[in-house]
Length: 192
Image (tube, rainbow, N blue to C red):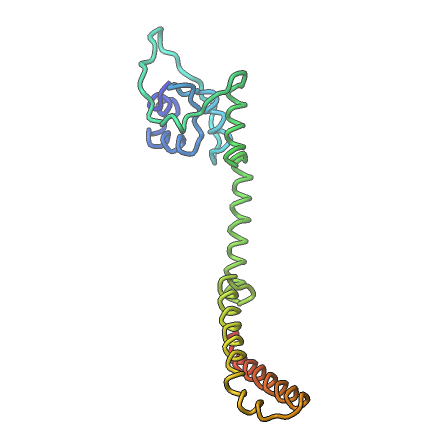
């Protein structure tokens, strides 16, 4: 059976059947649509379920063979010794779509709730982006590095006049404490 016949069987438009196909609800065996397997998937994933639909056989004339619109890479292939149901389950599990409609709704609602919680936490400044923290820390380290590298050129003349190791040690300690206090005062203006 082709997609047009399947649409007529269900009383829906071809566009609806194309959407079902895009969602992976239709099962093909070669170029032909497997009605029973497709009906099972539609019943499982469609919001309102599906009334029992059976294939109508009209006389003895074979259905015309048409080339499928599904690319070969997207077609459902059934491995040797595998039933249609097993192939369908394998593909759904591989793509992460092995939920019924109620489970999918629950997952979606949980996702939306978590996303809203994250948005709220961002606005309340309870969480921040890692990139923002990394940039701020990098900027602070750059200030510390610049300030510490400036110490020798600023204070070398004064230190060179000192006579004892204890005087040099005290002078360096005072210079370092002063630089760190200056850097700490710069951090007081950080936005909260």
